[in-house]
Length: 258
Image 1 (spheres, rainbow, N blue to C red):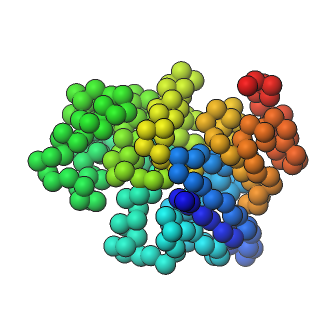
Image 2 (cartoon, rainbow, N blue to C red):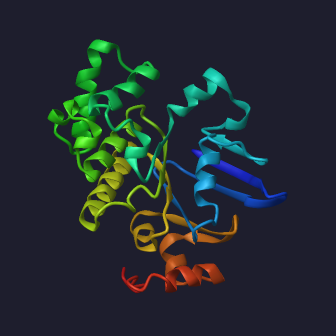
Image 3 (cartoon, helix red, strand yellow):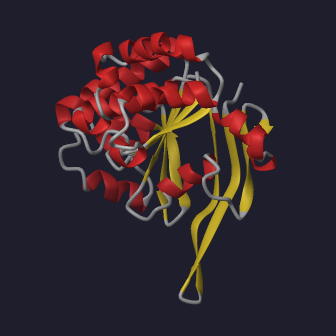
């Protein structure tokens, strides 16, 4: 079974009387409990692919099949219903949340919007979600701006899994965290994947992180796929010019590390 199948995805922008491709003929598939990473330099189209998959922007061409259904054919209530199974975790949860909202309010929203639990049941569900991501239930009453960056990202993950998604898009979701916290969040994501068979579309510029968590990687260059394959094999022996440049730009990356 394929969770996500993207075919011939394309997006052009128009600026100053000129047209340029941000995403050009991108195709890939992701299976259950699989992590596909998108890597590439700034401006390569990684985040645009994520926004296209989530239907936050419309593609100019291509097809997006999610759990066997063409997302581009859906709108309104039908699209909202499918989004319960397709979630996202952003780089900066402060930008994604109302910083003055409480943790409980942030986690209550998906339970309410998607009719997952009645009001009386939600406090128990919220406490269980916090526990699932390694947070104490007492944080529920705290405002988002009062907790640490690592805790906020755990809350963002808790919000994403509240709807029992089959796919989570992670757009530079650990890049703003300290190294020690980053490792903890990555372990949490791997544990959630093992237990709940969630697929990840993992967007990152950090090849070390990609090698640690991804099964496969696609390297983008100017909106096109430069190369793709097993994550460790591609990073150990990149064949494209941009792939070689990315590895060379990561001096701490030990390609011989198992």
